[in-house]
Image 1: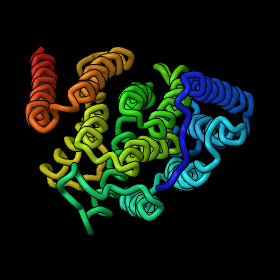
Image 2: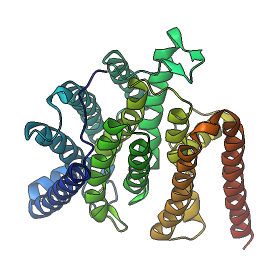
Image 3: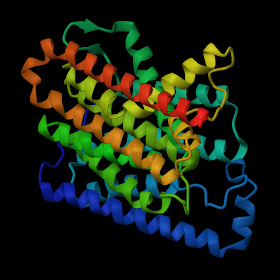
Image 4: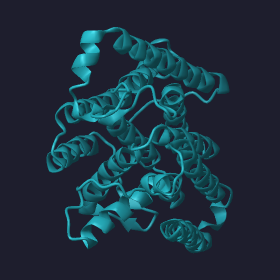
Length: 358
């Protein structure tokens, strides 16, 4: 993926962040008021599967995605971003647009999981041939023909991981917001301005919506929002690789900062396979569901997950300051992360046993 230079000025970063934030906030508020004041539109939307039994407005992804893309293109047209980035922005708009329409279709028709997965793989394939590629791991392993397999797995995996945690008000946008701030800091520290700029704009777009999605939510993302947002996060984390940054740190940090949705997705698939059912079968045993079953309110549940997520976000910053020690540090760091996850799962299971006997 070839693109021009990105701004390094703090003023430009703040402009992008607050522009996206203001647009997202204003568009979300307008959408809520429009739906609330239009009886015909409200009646029409209430027919969709996503709204069954819920008094909230769907399609919150519309203002989030629109504010993100509008900010990018507006800053490009105003000359605040190098015009050579038009190719990158066009590719992002194409990929996000395709995933956006898949999300709308899924929200309206409750698209079969296998059909949705197939379309996601096709979209990921298009983006792979557009330049978003994982070609090697570190400086030693050249993936060769496995490049497309790993790239598609990452794009589709992160897209669905974000989609799966969007089962409780405020959770998905909150996780994305904190992860994007972490990626912004990490990439800026390593002078990867392209990925850091996109991450800070996405953080602003997500935060503008987040205010209205806190429990009890006035509007929800739906697949219209969670699928393209997951796609964007996956693509932003691939940009450093396209710039030739192939050190282990650029594979490690995205995994750590997104560890909650990644772990939750792996556990969900493993749980279903062990039970002998399709891994695409929906259930109510995700982390946020399990916390809610302990008697915690949605607000307390997402607060706990935010604290855990922030812990991993801080952990993701550690390798940035130990870049020269990575070869010997990475095994120890992996052990630290695995032990951290194991401890958290242990305490969750212990709390569940105590609650069931109580």
